[in-house]
Image (cartoon, rainbow, N blue to C red):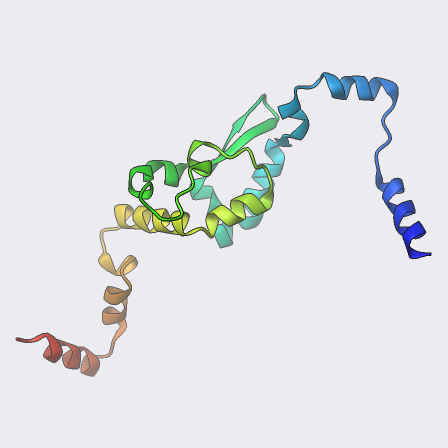
Length: 156
């Protein structure tokens, strides 16, 4: 019962290609068949920018005007020499990842390597240590009594 309905839905959702469409599709280069469009990447950037700050780092190379060849991270490229010694170093987004799925850039954004480069970028752009150093930030928002207690601890 359910299996028949499920396979019926799947076959109804498939796009049927005519003979000329199949010929046109097979003449496309393999990379272009699997490529996503630039509009898709731009849509991802808009949808995920607030949570992942993608406008800052996500870049893409195109095969032609409309199709994306690979995704890369310009911030990780900028700080590559500081990343190569990391335990989980992965050069995929430095050289350009051919994995063109949303899960791929989300995984990169949450990686230890990318988090470190975003902190390095923040340090490079900042003139105030409180913007990136948790201890300095905590000391700044501490009440005066607590600040005095901490100062006493460090007085020699």
